[in-house]
Length: 203
Image (cartoon, rainbow, N blue to C red; front, side, top):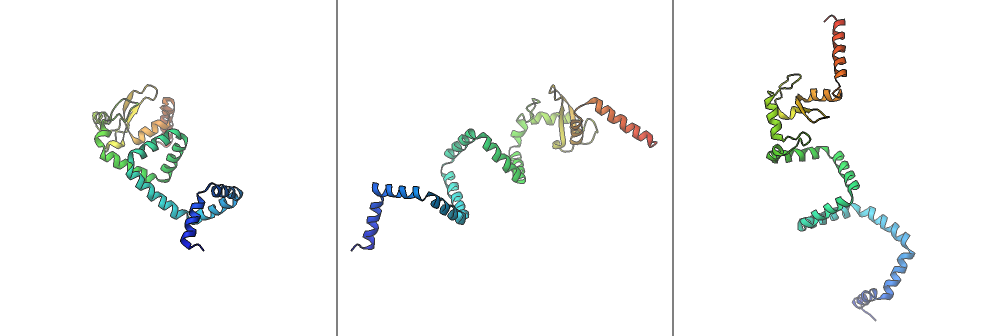
C-alpha cells in the first residue's frame, strides 16, 4: 500500500504525462462554462485582496526595472493613443485638485525653466520676455488701468489673426474682449447702449 508521500509523488509525476494533460484539457473544454462561472464568483470574493497584492508586486517591479517600465509605458501609449487620451482625461476629471497641486509644485521647482521656456510659443516669447512686457506697461491693464500686482493676473493680449502682441490686459478685460470676439462693431454698440441707458436715467 502506498504512503501519502508516495501517492503525492506519483500524482505529481502522472500530472506531467501526455495522457494526463490531454485528459485535463478535455475536461476543461467540457466544463469551461462552469469553470468561468466559478472563477467569476471566486474573483468577486477575492478581488480587493488580489488587486492590492497585484499593486504591491507592480510597485516592486517598477522599482527594480525603472528603464524597462518607462519603455513599456511609452510603447503602450504609442500603440494605444485613443485609450491613453481617454484615461488621462478621466483621471484629470476625477482628480482636479491633485493635478493642480502637481502642476504648482512643478512650476515652483522649475521656475527658471518656466521663465526661459517659450510658454507663449504662438506669440514667440518666453516667460522672461513676458515679464519685461508687463513691466514696460507699468504693471497696469491697458484698458481699465488696474494694478497687476501679480504677474499671473496679467494677460498678453494678441491679434488672433496675425499673432501680433497688442498689449497687456487684466484677466477681466481680456475675457471680455474674448467674449465679444474682438468685434469693434459689437463693442461700439455696447458703448452706445450704455450711454443711451444713462441718458434715460439723466446721468
